[in-house]
Image 1 (spheres, rainbow, N blue to C red):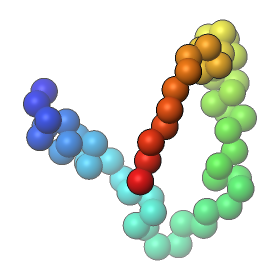
Image 2 (image 1 turned 60 degrees about the horizontal axis):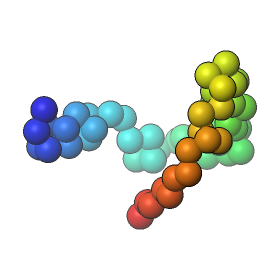
Image 3 (image 1 turned 135 degrees about the vertical axis):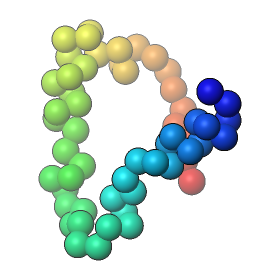
Amino acid sequence: MNYRQAEDYILSFTDYEKIPGIAYTSANYDLRRMEKLLLPLGNPHLETRTVHIAG
């Protein structure tokens, strides 16, 4: 897969921010499900130092 194909793939997903009527509440940002998923894996996200750059 080249860069253009990867970009097309990523952009093919639904952009929920552009759909009218979607309410962004604290329930939408609840990370407990992700914590439950990562727990049996040994919480690998706590072991790796990362920097998240977004904009």
